[in-house]
Length: 243
Image (tube, rainbow, N blue to C red; front, side, top):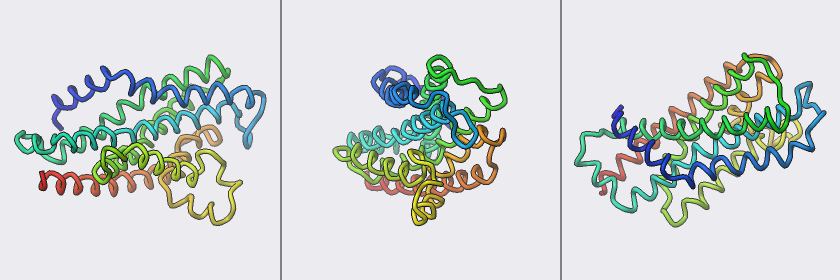
């Protein structure tokens, strides 16, 4: 891991206020707008407002993590990969830095969504549940950061936003982020379990119902992260070789 490169990348993101604003703005607006409809309700025995808050948190976390694809596409366009060949940064360290950068960007999104949950929606949870929800939502972004790498190395800069948005929308829809999987038709319920979104949602929401993290879901997400990470690494190597 090249800590200097990672530090520079974090500073670059912090200076780009538009990235932080838009990664936080949409889930926050949806949470506040929909929150009034969820008050005093419940979802399978859990507070409906807490359920909404966790859903918006995981939505913001996953979409923010995938946002790495945009910067990668731009870097490819300007020949950044060619410059990297002249530096001591090896491909694995570069990929790891990008993934860690994505995880860093997820933190403020989750914190703002949870703060709104407490202040605007009146969500009250135990310290243990808060911790499990935060860590589960944060770490669930890992395979989506790896997916962002893959998309960033396959798509062109002029189409990256459309492709990234379409991929995320389909995964969110099929994985049960917008609608409970239990309410889906049988075929969609089967498809859902083959998406990383389904397992990310399981990890984030499970503490609301069972006061514990879903261990199976964590293992599945880890497998997705490793598989997509390997693909992203190979795409980086192939792209650098052509530079």
